[in-house]
Length: 149
Picture 1 (cartoon, one colour):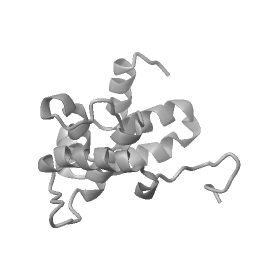
Picture 2 (cartoon, helix red, strand yellow):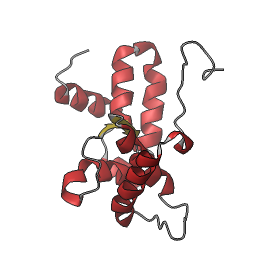
Picture 3 (cartoon, one colour):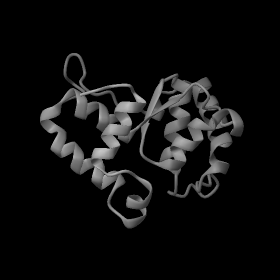
Picture 4 (cartoon, one colour):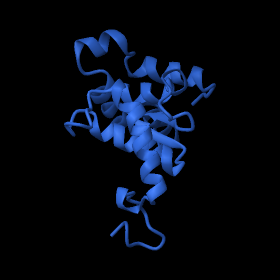
């Protein structure tokens, strides 16, 4: 229903919509990306395949942003120049940035966003030792983005 709405409320990008030139570009970017992942195109294994193929597609289509929680996918974009991944034009939006933005924009759902933050970043002992609790997270993000509630 969202695809068929006017205007569409969601767009689904498909490899089959790539032109021949775009497919070649995507393949060359995939070849630059996969050595930094667990994906092996010869085996076509599942590990990191989605990240490799999606990031290559995003770069070829000139899409500006890639929303991610996966550390390796974020590193592929943030270290694009140093690693020569071909992802130099792509920017990441991290899940915690989305959570913070939504908590500011829609205070009524802040409790749900707090639970999502805890699930994504503050669930395990390791996460609790490296990530701030919700209140500290909000304060740090307000400082980082120079925003006050």
